[in-house]
Image 1 (cartoon, one colour):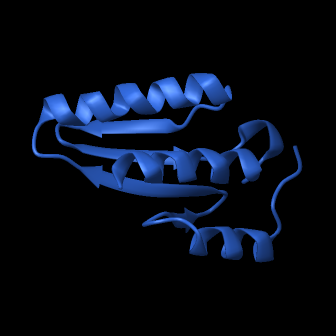
Image 2: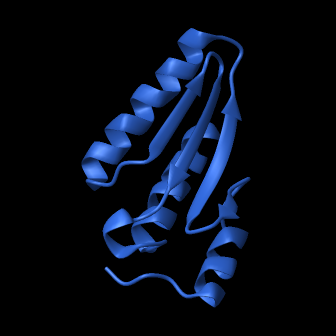
Length: 93
């Protein structure tokens, strides 16, 4: 899968909710009312990621979850990252 160029990344970010570019990855922070809900979210994201065979980096801090997406094998962002981010956005909306 080919890396996205700067124009494609900029356009893709406009389609996402709350994701920001940091280096060669996109990130979004989520906050929940408690740990159990945060872990429920993480478990659902894990199911999406397994189906897509594309796994985010996940940072868990009690009720705060930060997801980072990048296609490590390509050294940057690809359509896989944007697709998974969109699915996660739908989960939250």
